[in-house]
Image (cartoon, rainbow, N blue to C red; front, side):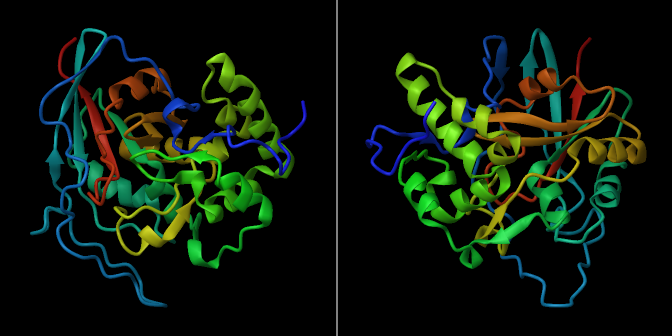
Length: 294
């Protein structure tokens, strides 16, 4: 199977968002209920980035700006069972924070037996320093070429930005990205979708490119896949006392990147199918999924 050459036709379309990627799923028995998150609500005012050498000083949970409080609790019916998703507002998480302690501080006041704790991939990755400022990336010619053939979606350009494609090449390697592009090019006319990300792998599928609606200063950064997501989920579960997962969600799909014992990743993806964490600057990087009926 030959990779696309520089003379490949414009028909080459790499899907930018993960709507039909490895996080794709069918939702025949999933019902949304009114009150689900509005995607671009206010985040409560501008956020000042930390200055060089300044330590993060998170507000005390329960602060005047709703930090530490449950700010939304939309429900979702999955397979005849209703789940409430309790979304907790936090401070802005920065590189170098102990994400396990941060999650524990905000989640433990609300945890009940039977809850499933979920943490957004972006917060986990940022805390680990897994991010790159876009303006510092120098895309190679291959990244520029491939990015031109990425299908745009209403939720951002994803790998359609040369810098983001360059990061994908670094994460997966040139041979794997070219193979993914070739497989996509051959399988798309057959009605298949998502093959690019299946071949490129999870580390590419979970890359978050620059978006206008992200919280400053992280609206200028490309965020990568977190390190050891399974291990992180297990440490969070041990600290908080309920099963935990690291999830990668957007308005087009979702995936569980890592999870502790007690989590059914397929079930959790369905419970979070409407992306309750929100696609915007909401400062709700974690939540609790709670069954309301047996």
